[in-house]
Structure formats: structure tokens, C-alpha cells
Image 1 (cartoon, rainbow, N blue to C red):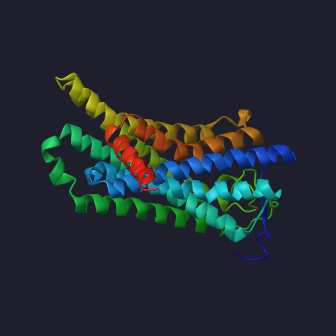
Image 2 (image 1 turned 90 degrees about the vertical axis):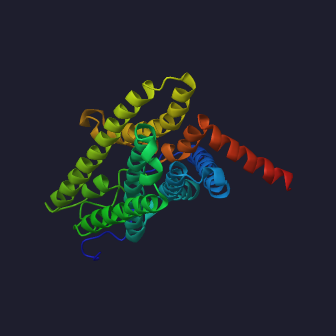
Image 3 (image 1 turned 45 degrees about the vertical axis):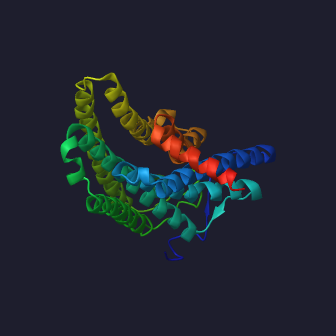
Length: 310
């Protein structure tokens, strides 16, 4: 980052200019953030402490909870601080850090969700080979690959974005640093290189999404062939939460980035950014615990044991 091509600070888009609404926004984000910390923290503790949950499905769920904690901790604390102190400024290095970690956590999370679809496919469509295919070494290798993909993707996009000369001001039209908004500040055609990288990433993400869809087509066909209603219910109870999380993750992101330009506005961009970057990490623990009896029992035992020891 050279001083000649970069502003000394970026100005993030505020949610509102009214002091009372700024404090309301701070309180709302604080509540969402604490809910995300509590929900994902309970999942992490339950999976770690309860030996009944030491299975591939819950190992990947533990990874998902870690990524959710990371992704919501990138933008929300800074947004809360800006609302509380009535400021908009973020340093170039802070902005680069937001972009790097946002891409890292989002890429790794989507990879983990894809792996979880593969895990459910093997468990339901090839149950006799499940323990052989999804052994502990394979699970660790897949999780490492997901985190590695996140690091590589984040490094490519961050380096490429912040190698561009930016001379169109320093106002970012979003409440956190986001690559499309940074590209609008570029004064060089070199931004097309980053656009190309984004297209490649989108194509890879679409390939993962297509794999998840095809996996669930096979899964639902196998579940419907299960003779007992109890067996079908048990299979659906492990698949539907994951499918709901994937749907929430994909739908909010697609609508945010593929909406028609005619319906674009700063307020709508803020709202959609909250939907795809803030809501999923807070809601995912609730989705996974609603239909999962094993997880609910483990969390209840954890909470009960905590209060009994007080």
C-alpha cells in the first residue's frame, strides 16, 4: 500500500445519522453478536466434551461453529464501535484485514458445508462403507483442505484488490470493507483482473452448490426407500438442518450480489449485507439444534451441569 495510491483511511457507510438510532443499532448488533457467541460456543463445548458427539458429522459441525464465530467477529464489533462512538473511519490495514478474514471464513465455511453434504451422502447412501470412508484421518484432511482453500482464496483476493491504485475518494458504500465497494474506488482498468478472480470464485462456488444439490437428490431418493417411518425421520433430522443452513447461506449471498441494479440503494445494500454476513452465524446454531435430539440433549446436559456446579 503506497501513500500515493491509497487514502490514509476509509469511511464506512453509517446505518443512520441520528444518535438515538445509532445507539439502537449498537444494542441490536450487540444482542445478535452475543447470541452468536452463546449459540456457537455451546455447540463447540458440547461437541468437545460429549464423547457421543465424536463423530464425523459433529466434527464438521464444530468446524462450522468455529468459522461462524470468526465470520461474525470480523465486521460486527467494528460496526458496533462506529455506532457507539459516532465515527466512520477505518485504516487501510484494518480494511484489508476485514476483506482477508471475511473471504477466508466465507470460503472455508462454504467448503465445510460442501463436505458436510458429502458426509451425509456417504452416511445415508453408502452406510456400510461409512466408517471406512469417513475415518478420522480423512475427516481431518478434508477439514484442513477447507481451511487451506479459505486462506488461499483470501490471500489472492486481498492482494489483488489492494494492489490497485485507488483515487476515487475513500467512502465505502457499505458498513464494512467489501471488495465490490473497494473496486468502485479504483482509477485503473486493472480492477478487471479482480473482477475476473471474483467470477472464477463464483464459478467454483456454483460447482460446490451443484454438488450439494445433486447429493441431496440422491439422499432424498435413498431416504424415501427406507421402509420404516422412524428411519426416514431420523435421516431427515440429520439432513434438513444442513440443507437449511446451505439455503440460507446461498440465498442471502446470491440476492445481495445478483440483484438488479435498478433496485440498488445504500439502505438495501446495508440490509442485504446484514442478512448474508451477520444473520447466518447467529441463526445456524438454532437451526442445527432444533431437529437434532443428540445435540439438544448434550447442550441441555452441559447447561444443567454448569448450574448444578454453581
